[in-house]
Amino acid sequence: MTACSSAPPLRTFVLTPPLAPTALAATTAAPTQRIVIRHVLVPDYLDTTDIVMRAGTNEVKVNGTGRWDERLSQGLTRALAADLAARLPADAVVLDMSSPTQLQVLVNVNSLDLWPDGRCVLAATWTIIDHDAPRAGASGSATFDSPAIGSTLEVGDAHLVDAISSNVVKLADKIALTIGQRTDRSALPAH
Image 1 (cartoon, rainbow, N blue to C red):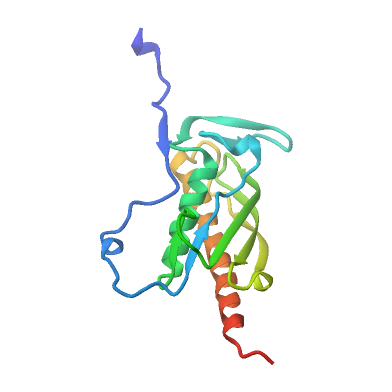
Image 2 (spheres, one colour):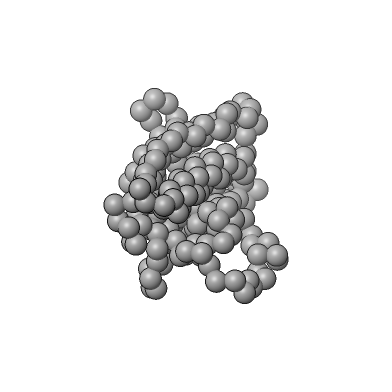
């Protein structure tokens, strides 16, 4: 009876890579600032452990061979925090608000369209809240597009996850730039 079953085993994916051994080394310098990454908001139909893909203009389907190890919003939050920590090594990037923070990053993923051919389009907005100077906050928005990588028969689950991860890296680049510009402006002398 089991010989009749030809479906591949269900694979489970995360958006964060393993921590590099060099990242485990403790730094002795105090962080420049403490940045908290708030829970990333995603559309409700995506916030599941299913990998949801576009099947047409107004149709989505659940990927039958792969799934997330955690809800997509949690995975995006962790991946974004890891990517920001890599881009802002002088800062302490954290996921909780258990201790005072200077900056708070709020991200809203407005859409995340994953296509069977590997194309991924991520549209997001973000706001940086500065607790030391609430009026000096910053915000931004962008759309990131990873091109198709093959026919729907050639693209595996790992390629789909890589397409999303690639766009999260691009989002982290933009947010880090926004944080850097805010920091640069706050360092300017007042006129």
